[in-house]
Amino acid sequence: MTLRSSQAEEFFGSARQIVRIELTRVRGSSPREAGTEMFVSADRLFGTIGGGQLEHIVITKARTMLAEGTLEAHLDLPLGPEIGQCCGGRVELTLRRMRRTDRDDALYRLRSYEEALPHVYIMGAGHVGRAIADLLQHAPVHCVLVDMRKEELAQSTARVDMRLRAIPEVEIFNAPEGSAFIVLTHDHGLDFLLTSAALELGHAAYVGMIGSATKRAKLRSWCLSHCDGLSIDQLTCPIGASGSRDKRPEIIAAFVAAEVLAALTAGDKAAGGREETALLQAAQ
Image (cartoon, rainbow, N blue to C red; front, side, top):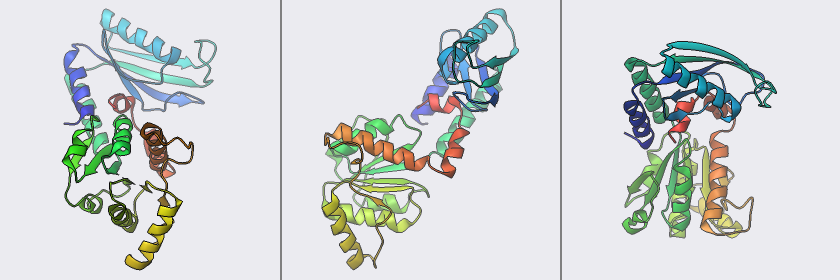
């Protein structure tokens, strides 16, 4: 069971009565999309429908339902001056007391969502790799931190999938289609091997390698001579260099995480992201 599933199971198991809130219809601008859900007990919350005054009103309504024993309610709320919110759209919501089968269904949706999360492989558990893992543990991805060195992996406190591998390129060959790869090992030669392997897949959503313009040029020459002229046009190198000259690991990590998440949510993937529920986001 993952951290997200554990959080959800703990929430559903700890509250005797819970109201499920679902955005059933959205017109115009809204903080979240139709299908978004959250859960309210007498003293806890799980998920979000976007925060602000809208969420405050709905939480109050859900807790009133719990106190009065109401089973179901429907709300139609304008997101404008009437409620002190400025989105300008309008939303309809359904609030319903949950049965045991409803809780089981919610957990099933969460697990299904987790299984479909894009994989992000951080190839190297040095200072920057660990800093990236610290950030991506909170993102809607399955983050995998890979290294040949047990002592480096042991220094990571991120709640991600950590894998000690003598042959780390095996992780690349076995990665799901659409995965992202961030290459920053302790060895330039290994960086070249792993980066070329990720590029050769042909289906990676993102391939990035730590380094410089000079290192990129050397990789290009290496691919020409060792990889049958493999193109590196889809490679991001250096990584995390678009926003700052600051080379502290935490700063680099922030920009790299932004690059990866932008790549994973671009185009058709963004449409899929709009369908996720607040139940799933809140567990991150």
